[in-house]
Image (cartoon, rainbow, N blue to C red; front, side):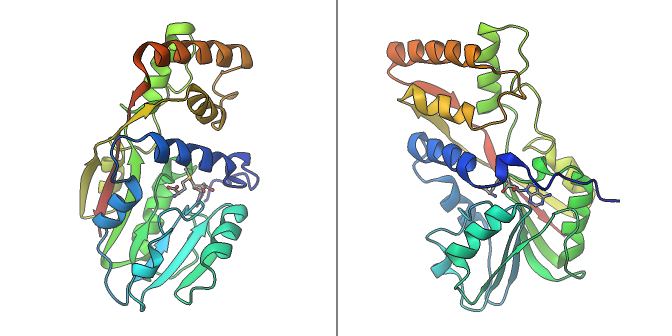
Length: 263
Ligand SMILES: C[S@@+](CC[C@H](N)C(=O)[O-])C[C@H]1O[C@@H](n2cnc3c(N)ncnc32)[C@H](O)[C@@H]1O
């Protein structure tokens, strides 16, 4: 039985929140290679491959890259949010190789062994029944097909922010909870459905020179649900601004990488 996910998840109805977070990483990441170019380099794509991306968001993986793909690939870009599907349809829908559709990763509307590659970057932790989604992904992959999933680790930005918040409000648990699917706990979850799982880490950190951009990142999350109210946000702003003035920037660790699962 599929766990019903709300259709109207405000966080992902449009890419407003996602783009605020993407901009912070684009602007302030110390690894100038860029996560998207690195991720694309890790993926082996052959002529004729059928590729499915789940939770494609605003299509950032393919921006400036679609032209380099072989002319014979078939690429299905999908997301559970109709707003995201509309965005990628506007961007990529004219390309004959691309098909855009709304798909719930827990119930993929394709027959067994349809795809050479499935991709789900930063998406599985948002899915209610991750084990079901992983079984679905393995089912629609051809024998020897590959699943690529970029994920954050538990020692990155959220961990840093949790410690900063606790230094102001010791009982606050914002950003304390580990993602249900991350760089560490994702490997044993994939092991159940795939023959081999590899982890590749992307070394990076943030060097943020404008406090307000970090505050906008916090505001773009489900911060009220996490116990961050306006008063705490003001205190955090003062805390980070002091750090920025003292050190010239706010330096934050990142932990991100790619799990590659072979069927
Ligand atoms: C954090 S965003 C990642 C977007 C993009 N992959 C990226 O890396 O920028 C997570 C995406 O997963 C989508 N999503 C949430 N639940 C989903 C589900 N059950 N099936 C497919 N996509 C889902 C959201 O709508 C959102 O676009």
